Figure (spheres, rainbow over the protein chains, first blue to last red):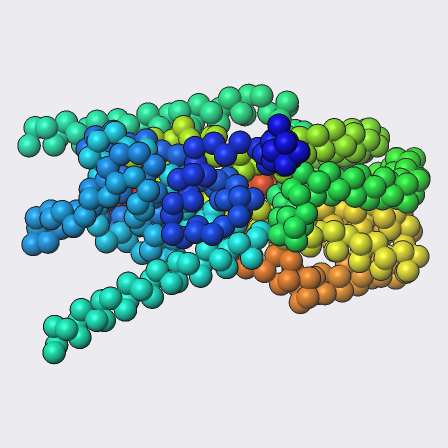
Length: 166
Length: 352
């Protein structure tokens, strides 16, 4: 084994194992480009939950506390329109939902239900705010990404509305 | 329809079962309360030190290293405090113990004289009834005063528990988040978000209260000791320390210290001037506390109406004495916030 490889092995041992949460976190745009040590800090505030088929992750109008990242499985998002539930999206591995609740205590806009046995990683507002207080640098990076995502969504909605008007 | 009825019944049963489990846990904790003292002390210290560790971690220091550093600093601080104040505390308590019989006989004499006068002048109270009652109360007081002798042992035990609890503090500070996460993992999916919110809010209420009150108590105690010492009052450290500790109990605590400190000095020296000095110093300290220290340290951590605080403290005192008085306000705040969150989660949004 070359000296460089040996050094890498030692470094990996010091840094600890990646486990199965960090690779999932890496795929989430909110945590894009974050260093391993920062992902480790986020891993500490992640809650792993498993939902059975047809089990509800959260209900529409329920006060939201955080976002979920799908580690394995499938989640269906439905919304009540004219007293009937309409499917608005189906999300798979690596995708996430409920991120608006990271910013404000507002009722959920849709219901999330597991389609099959689904493993999710939950990140919740109280823990995120705690992390921001403890690590302002890391916190501002996450908030920046979150704002960019919301700005993107706002731009798309505005463009759609403009097209409708024109 | 029938299925719905059954589901409703089942959900009610679930809620009752959860309530029973929580009650069972509280009951077990109550039964083993004697073993819990170092853990309760460790909890309080952890709530107090956690923001400092968080700040150090935010500044880039490894959390374990930050915890070790902070505990070493705390132990050094405790050691210095012990070395500086212990000889004086010891002298003050021993002198108080030695003079106790003299104080009691002084109180007894003046009270008996007053009762005799009352019995004579009112006419309808049979002679000796009030005097006998006073005699009984004085005997109780005398046995109470003898118990003060064990105060030194209590202080010594408290200090050793404080040092021992540092081990628990180390793990609470270092792995607190992991411990919390492991415990939360057992909550069913359905109640998870509500429970997480609940834990966070209770944690915020209790930690704000403990942090605020301890900081406030420390400054009030130090100011009272300095003030009393400058005015040459005997038992300055004793009265000052009691003033600091009693300040943790809002409204009622300071009132008790005024009475206790004033009476002690009056009986000890018999001088009205000294009584005025004590009341003046304690009053000034309370004024500075209300205007400057408390708003900064405690702030709006206890957003409860003063009347409610007095009611809650009285109930706490009635049920569990001093501990009840100390813990009643944060307990009430936790219960209030729990009710608000549970009501919102379970009733308003039908999440049950």
